[in-house]
Length: 411
Image (cartoon, rainbow, N blue to C red; front, side):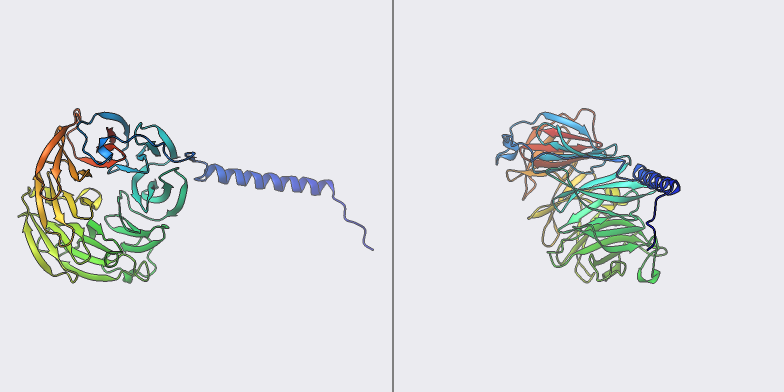
């Protein structure tokens, strides 16, 4: 029989050294990990129920005054749902009580925010990493709890546009589409690490503007206005969820009659593109054939540059699409995308309350008939020295205005 093994002093010393090394490596990994530099504070429950004011109770308010304001440089438009307004600034995404502005939940990282958007009834926070906007986290509206996350080579700067169960992240040379679990369904443009480069039809083109259509409305589609070397401006429409993400399935790609354009909206069978000199709206069918062209009573200057982040400022409702051109608001028919009315001198697309449109204009929110665009009244709003575009949304008796880097709540 062999004698039992005995631990020597050397064995104990070696085991202690190994344990110290393992602990040190684990601590170093944690210290340098994203988890160490992330702080999440969730809400205990849903937002408290507050008595809604006239702005959200089925009747128009007779007056509006400022209730609260907060910095929010990362939200291109106001975000609100479930009694919560969301702000994003200085690396912090915060869910605030819609009526008081008090922080209910927050998510903080030691990275800069690229953008914050709403999709799939969640909040999407996109953070910088190196020179990309590559780290994406979903947060619950009610309590801020984390959902799916992803890391990918999205270009900086980027903006998000959602439609149904998909969201697109814009980029001048490369863009992506994700589904609700943040799995990528489409990669388009100059792939950062191409496995099969030949699968991309136009990797050398610049993306001027993008629009995404709802998959429930005849299949998800992505429209891209492209500037390609040696040719006029091009419109490409493709499936937003091809069989293989890096193998785009182009439905049509056609040259437009001009050197500049921006895609404004898509319906199940149509896509609308705005062109300058003269200002006009071209409507194309599902095969890329122009079926209508409408003159636009807006300055050509509104259409000569690319929209911020590659996205036209558009709000879609069940009956119409409202487009802010930079100096006017144009209402488009939801089905055939023809212009229904134009309101010059506006500051944004507005939001609907009690069957009326509250449209931001200098010094007020104009009250408009949504069908005709006729002004029925006005609610004075003191914006101080701010003179830029105003994004609006209405929820729970509160009207939110995005004024540059600041979110302002009116009641």
